[in-house]
Each structure stands twice: as C-alpha cells, then as structure tokens.
Length: 346
Length: 143
Figure: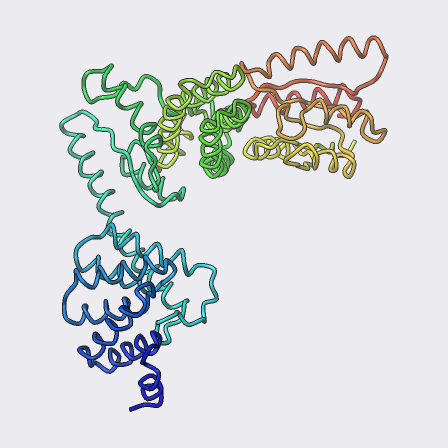
C-alpha cells in the first residue's frame, strides 16, 4: 500500500476526495472492480464532481461498455466543460462508434480549450500528458479526418463533371467545409464546384448560395444554367495592364487575396442593414473586379453599390449570392492554368 | 532635362495601386505609394511629388478633404492631381460637381489649385500614361 493510498484510506470516511482518488489509484493499478466501487461511492457523496465520472468512463471502456463510457464522459463534461481530456476521450469513443461528426466536434472542443495555453503545462487528470502534446494529437486527428472528407468531395465532383462532359448538363455543386482558405476555395472551384459555403453553416448563407442556381433551374427548365456572358473579358483586363501579362498575374493574385475579406464585409453589412457599408464594400469589389475584366461580376457589384446608395437593400442577399457565383467563375477562370497563353495569343 | 518626375499614387485599392505604379515606373517616373488619405498627405509633404494620382472614394477621408489639405499647405498647393473615379456609379456625379465647383471657384477667387484631371476606373495602362504626361506638361514640368 502506497503512502497516498494509506492516507486516502485513513481519510475516506466522509471525504469525497479520498474516494475519488482511491478510485483513480485502483483504476491505474488495473483493479477495476475496486476502482468502480470507490468511484460510485464518491459519486454518492457528491454527485456534482466530474472526476469520478471520468474514472468510471475509463473503467467502462476497459470492459468494452462503450455506451456507458460515453454516458459517463458526457456527465463529466456536463459538470466541467473545460475537462479537456474528457472531450478528447469522447472523440475517441465517438470514432469507435462510427459517429465521425460528433468525434470531430469533440476534437474541435479540445483544440479550442488548449489553443493559447502554455504547451508544457500538464493536462488535469492527464497523468503527465502536457497541453502541447494533446493539442498536437487533436490537430493531427482533425487534419486526418478533414483530409478524408476533402478528397471525397473533390473526387466526387470530378467524377460527376467527367460524366457530364459526355452526357451534357450541369448539376450545380456547392462545397460545404470548415476550411475557409483561399487555397482550398480554389481547389473546390478547380474540381468543378459552383459555389462554396463555410461551416458553421447558417441557413441564410446556405440559402444565398443555392438561390441563384434554383432560379436558373426554374427559368431554364433543364439543369443547364444559361451562361450568357463569359466570366472574364481578357481583352479588357489586358487593356488595364497595357498587355503586360506578368503584371496581370500579380494583380490577379493580389485581387483574389482581397476578395474574400470584402465579400465577408459586404455580407456583414447586409446582415446589419448597413446601407453605407454595403455601398462602400460593393464599390471596392467593383473596382477589384473591373481590373480583372470580370465584367459580369462587376455589374452585380455595381447593382449592390446602387442598392446601398439608395438604402434599398431588399434583394441584397440574392444579389450577393449572384455576385459570389459570378466571382467564383472569375476565380475559376484565372485558376485554370493556360489563360496566360490565351492572353499572349490574342 | 534629366530630372525624373516624382509621382505619388494614393488609393486604398491595392491592385489598382500596383497597376498604376507598374505602368508609370515603366515610363521612367519615380513612384511613391500610399494606401489611405492620411498617409497620402504625409507622403505628399515628405516626397513633394510633381503629381498625385488620387482615388476619389476612400474610407476615412474623401478626396475633397485630401485635396483641400493639399491646397492649404504651401508646400503641396501647386501639385497637379489626377483623380480616379469609377464609371457609371455615384462618382460620376461627384466628378461633374467637383469639376464645376473647381472651375467656378478658381474663376471667382483666382485661387490656383494646381492642374487637375480625372480618370475613370478601371484604369487603362495607355490612358494612365497619356494623362499623366499631359498633366505634368500642363503643370509646367519639363518633358
């Protein structure tokens, strides 16, 4: 019997802490029966403490009782939302039970709790695991999981588009992802997706993203949206830069970097019903798109600017969705390798 | 005649600044840039440019304010200004109003605001080069 065990045994009468600790010590030693007994005792003394539930969940896991283990972890987290190891273990359990979505959510909780914390600090109940290590594990698992999903979505899109090349038609595909980077957006559009929404998803955002396609489908009757204007008037873009293709490349790069921020600002201004904000952000986008020869997108931005100027924001979200769709086409145009050759040839 | 004209480009729209400065650099001018009205004014006092390319709609300080301050300061009062406006939008009205106002004001007060011209966005490389050259000439810079 170790010193701690002896002390705990001495104090255990009336002491929640000692019960809980004894449960933990027995669990660590592999004496699960005894461990469970002390944990349950601790809970009986004070059912609002998270630690014994956590130890119990470890015991249930050892017995392969996954539902009970999950339940105990949920209770742990209910009692202490910042019990980071409980979040991490819950993620493992969810994964074993095939609930990838819930596992993902738990891992994100781990990330949220540990980010910004000193990396060398031990995690509570972690038996020496430090925050940095746990964060690393969580991030690795998140990346792996997202990686699987990313490939799937992109692959599926490519397959569908390939099929369409033979059969004709065009099913609108909108990417849904937690990755909001420009790089990834480009990847989606390159694979042949038509739009892009980021998670956490809002109903409004989703509606905005699908609205233009639904309208087009209604008007056209078939799944083929009418494409009246080309996304980019390369001649106009070359006139801007004086036929300097290299300069145009630099301008494109810089512009695409600025666009997401402006679109976000525009979306926020619309949500706030902030007419001057809509006017100025739409104006800004208009300028950027004009330099790129994105005339169709520029016209939509112009419309939004006028809406802001006249404080008539009705239909603003539909226009924003249209703008995003048109901008998506501009991005796709410049993302596709080979446009420089077209520029040289013209 | 070896002196290079110094040109200051002020616009919050970075791609446009890149375009204009690249085009003008190719023409052999010395280029300085600023991305908002306040730093534009500071740069103007610092480098004393021969010409300023100025965007008409910047957040924070509009072109009127920038222009007025440029004119108020003895160091920068005579600098030629090429204003950038956007086609079709509200800037078009601003541009006309401003042109009218400066014309009337200059005639009434005899105040020399320096040469001024307007250029519509999206800018075109050839047009930028041409207008800058003409404006420099109009403001007495040896070409």
